[in-house]
Image (tube, rainbow, N blue to C red; front, side):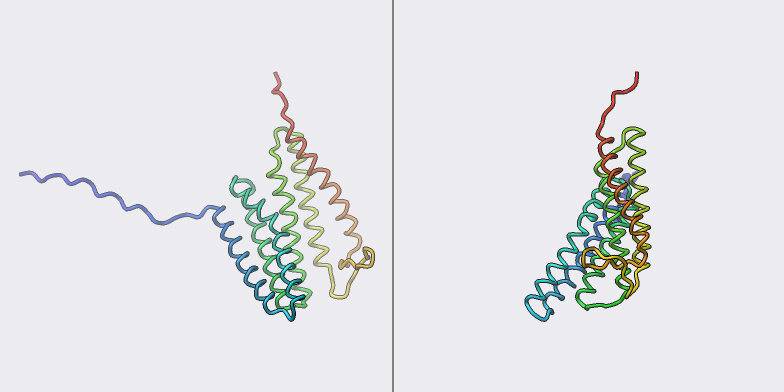
Amino acid sequence: MSEIAQPPEPQQESHLQTFSRLDIGMLVVLVSMAIAGVVGLIAVLSADNDVAAVGVGFGVAYVIFLAGGTIACALACLARGRLEALSLGALVTSGLAVDLLAVAIWLDIDSTAYAKLIGIAFVLSVFGLIVLGLTLACRPRDSLARYLYFGAVGASLLGAVIAIVLVLDTGSDDFGPTVGTVPVPFGNGGLLRTLAATFVVLAALWFAALAASRVERAPET
């Protein structure tokens, strides 16, 4: 008697799951916010008095919300598959800036090098917000919109480089010009004018690119 043919055994499905860039970005945000939340809570509970606790609490919350714009734009870009490398970098720098500043508030760290590291992280976070926000807001449809978009991105990169140089040029006792009665902690005052001019050009290009990307032209016949 011939043997009854047995049905083939189903292949075991692989349980290995690959993480997308969006998953990695979400993990970065969760870890950085968890650290900031725990450190901030400890700083509030260990404050000397109620007034100091309120100041610390609002300070940490303000820093988190300040970086929240970059985080939101970066996650949105990752979900749409746009500028993924820059989005991940913006998430890392934003989380690093928040965590380092929260630790500095908690431990009352007084270090110029530590302050420069926080400043660089915030500079990258802010200019990342500018680029990612424009990427989400517009989708260039013609050459004019593309030129304006890339011009705004280039101005953002130039502004980031200048701002980082200014942060690195800062000394512990080196203060440049004053705004009212508040000293500006940059040693190289000449670059401040360049940075201001870059911001003006960047703002104009940003909104010009946004406007140009919204115009739908009829196809040429």
